[in-house]
Length: 360
Ligand code: BGC
Image (cartoon, rainbow, N blue to C red; front, side, top):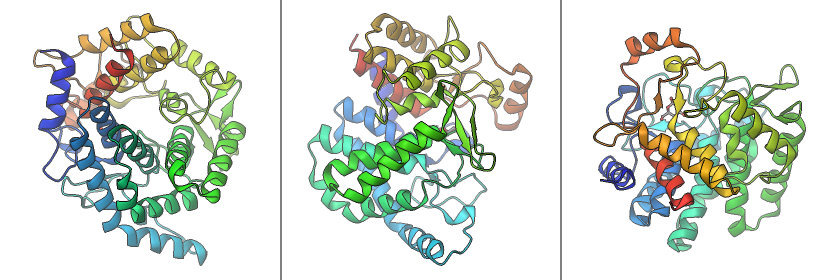
């Protein structure tokens, strides 16, 4: 069976009856639904025409947001009274498949998934022709817009669940991109202002040398680091144009420092998680960029590489360990959490997305 069809089957198989998608069914720490992963899984299903699957995921997120709306209200009250807010008071990044907060410790204060959700919902509405959903989820959309508008400039964990004291450029892209997508329907001047503010902040503060930086450090007032998630600034969030010099230099640095000549893409140079291998999702992201910028052959080369990482049953892992950045950490993680997660639904989703963008 083609990897495209296997990927659809895997996603359908592991979508729960509640609508949530498990991050990875066989990896204990990933038996939850992450809003971030789920948004891209749902987008893949939309591109492939499985609108029912995607709709059920968005319904699930809307229920979660409704269930925890009191947290946002309390945070806003505390903000207005000038009171401190603890990390655990923010909306969580992952939930049980039923849609409840999980009890264990997790770095939950992450804003990117909520921005991505607004973008993903707007894409679903467009692709499936279901504009009425914007009305159905009016309250949840308003709540998430308020949450992001009030708190975007606070530090939080990044999309890899690290660096809690920084402001992350790719997180800001999710927020600005999500607010902008949904504002095509809301047409709210305040939301447009926030998008402008975030974009100017990114262009002025989140820059190192001639390219975008992984994060801005509010304590030191400096920006630093490189990360492949910076690709999100253009695809899908379109906060900048692909030919913006800052973005072009960012892609060049990713190619120079994070792309293996005969392999895939690493997350960031200092990565030690499972030794810092090559990630399927990020390889698909770079290929997506190539596909949109007349580099079809380069895109297909990466697509083929992704196909080569599937096992006999067509399962894609989170990362492969062919060229490790920090090999001394590989065993540590295997002992701690077992082998690399596989199948990872987000990897399958990114393969579907790439396939749809390339149409090989
Ligand atoms: C990654 C996250 C991801 C989660 C579930 C973590 O290891 O850093 O980006 O959302 O796994 O797939």
